[in-house]
Length: 299
Image: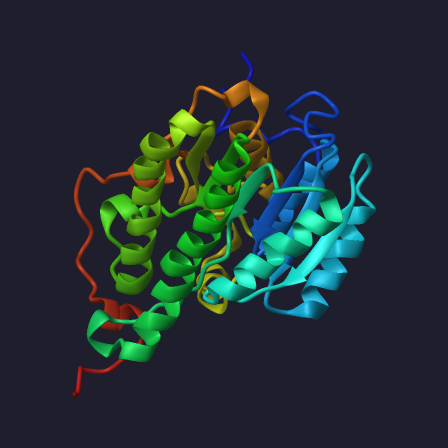
């Protein structure tokens, strides 16, 4: 008898597509934070399916490099890069103006991927640190979403939004009070706007990634992975493996595709069930300060 399978099977190879070729041909997709990491991975799968792309971010060097990579993806449409701090609603409007001039109209799809995050005990968070994360992750997401919605409402056209979320929007995130609160707001936007804008043909869904190692991970995530033994990255997941970035891209393209038109107000978690894992016996509690190697709190 063959050995039973261990964990979830590996995904199809890089370059595979989950949807028919040309699904997004003639359609424009705006991805915030699209110049690096998971944002670029998502943009890649839209490109593979024929989309015209606008990738937005704050660093022109990263955007230009990503623009070249995405333009070389087989099947890709036009690729435009736009420098944008999404905390500035005037700059957000300018990006939509530029996208319209380059691609001929309001983007059909918006992927709100841009966010900010770093670990910190709640009591150590300064007002500026709180604002930095909440203003990008929640307020910036709202500014881009609002601009997208207003333009589609004015044009009488349909559109699709995918908000990248986090599982601690449900569970709370010790060490990430700022980010968890912001992501809870992002999730609530999905549920609120699905009802408000559904009658006008605008759908909105959330997409929550699990552990998807990639070259542009933040230092806190990279440090955690480096501290773990190589085998631990897999054995700490119920799937007994980590995710491949293309798997998140496939989920995003499905949610924004014609095949998911009746799905709105939903948040899809793509993490191999990791966020639902529970132990029969809870491990010993280690404070956030201890986990981060910080001493006792001192005002």
